Image (tube, rainbow, N blue to C red; front, side, top):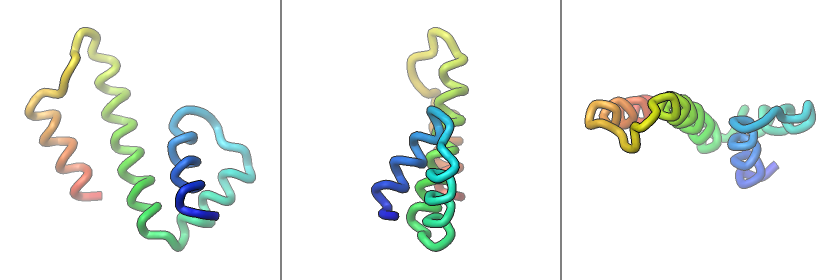
Length: 77
């Protein structure tokens, strides 16, 4: 499986359930591809941050502390 297809499945996983075949193919690719592992990790972190922001009604931008927290999490992954 290509990195392009894997990145698509990583993003799709955030929005809906993957089929068993998709999960298997993605996990197999992630076993050996360090770039896609990093992309998957970053995607999970960003997904969590965006979900948390969505809960803050009327909050249209990130505060300075939220920006720094995001930078730290992405740098450590």
